[in-house]
Image (cartoon, rainbow, N blue to C red; front, side):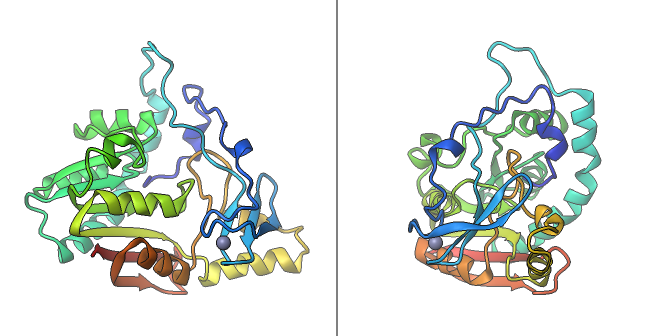
Length: 288
Ligand SMILES: [Zn+2]
């Protein structure tokens, strides 16, 4: 998901039925599975839980099943949504072209099988295809899939990476899997990483970027909350949201490296800075 999607989630054509959040006990840490999590920051629309066992931070929200247009509907992407997505493409393209260079520094894309998880508007799948790869993309939101098809001629798949379509039919299939700005959005990131591992060939590459919780900006957000005894939650509100497909968790660098290692990956490259403007870390790792 390479684009901000807050405006789109309120579109009348979107159907969101929250069925999972009520079924999950958020005292159970989404990372280490210990019943050691408790509310740490109470924001206006959501609560950030922190795990006493592993230090993971996550909000008390899960997404519903992927949204689809009503069965038999002839709804299509409306003009407002199209303009919204298209208007954000230039900024997205600049970043994704940098990401493409990173991938090319590690892998020859000619003939490579690639999967972009959380493909958004399809731009990265398009760039991979232009580079000679056999590229596939997963995007749960149909409005983005329709945009990708009409804009780039890219057919994205709506089935998420845990679906049998991937976990039974594509085991060990891909040379490259990418997760750009996705890891903070998924319901269960450890499971997503494990599923990504499963579809990679031995020696296959995984590329991921995600915000970093031990960055300076996050700490400033926490200080602001604490110093005001919770009254000023505005900065933390900018990092988390219970809206569909928004930020649900933010990893520290150490947590991400530990998870990658436990999943079976060998980390070959980590780019991160405590002072980066977007507080991002970029991980490159390889299936053993
Ligand atoms: Zn934990």
